[in-house]
Image 1 (tube, rainbow, N blue to C red):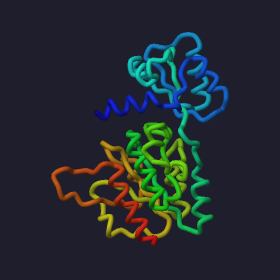
Image 2 (image 1 turned 135 degrees about the vertical axis):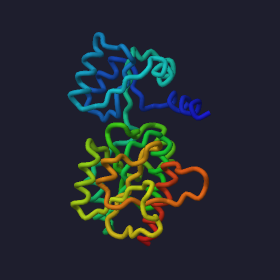
Image 3 (image 1 turned 180 degrees about the horizontal axis):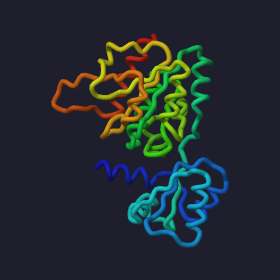
Image 4 (image 1 turned 60 degrees about the vertical axis):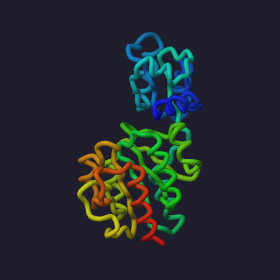
Amino acid sequence: MKNERDNRENRANDNLVIGRNAVLELLKSGREIENVLLAKGEREGSVNRIIALCKEKHIVIKTVDRKKLDTLCGGANHQGVAANTPAHSYATVDEILALAEARGEAPFIIICDEIEDSHNLGAIIRTAEACGAHGIIIPKRRNVGLNFIVAKTSCGALEYMKVARVGNLAQTIDELKKKNIWVYAADMDGQRWDQTDFSGGAALVVGNEGSGVGRLIKEKCDVTVSLPMLGRVNSLNASVAAGIIMYEIARQRL
């Protein structure tokens, strides 16, 4: 059922640019591009120019099965190439910090470490906006971007939430810590979330749906916080766990 739903949503994705010439002109235009999808084995003609421009502009190229690309493009003639454009423009980390300063509040930031599911990112954006967070930071690679499904799942919250995309998440965390922002990893084997002091500048790191927060990123964090697991399963959905901790941070700020 989930795959069928994703396929229907992807076919309705207005942010997908299809075809070699269209993608080439998109790359030349300077518009923001989430990533370029390239069918396996495509390396002839203008595809080489597309690959070169992507490398020049540091745009992620994803190699996909041709049948998957057929599905994503709704059966249209994609010529082995398509490009995802973001459903909303990205902000910068400085803009997120400037918003906190303008509100006269200590920064409250959510950091997503390799969140792969669009519905999870959309739900995190929706809860973050409801909790009064100033922004969300995601990595450029191995993390879903601001695609159509994310925008839809956020239920409008994406229009009000600043999302920054960075090349080096670990380096960004170091820069936040220099600004007196404490970084909290939501992961296993940490201190209880409801016994943690989140006062002052706070950045909450939410990890990958399967593997959690990466080792390097976790080592960069100041504190690891956990939710008690009283049932038979040993983990919660990423957006659910993030929402519980976000509301605790919000509660301590009231």
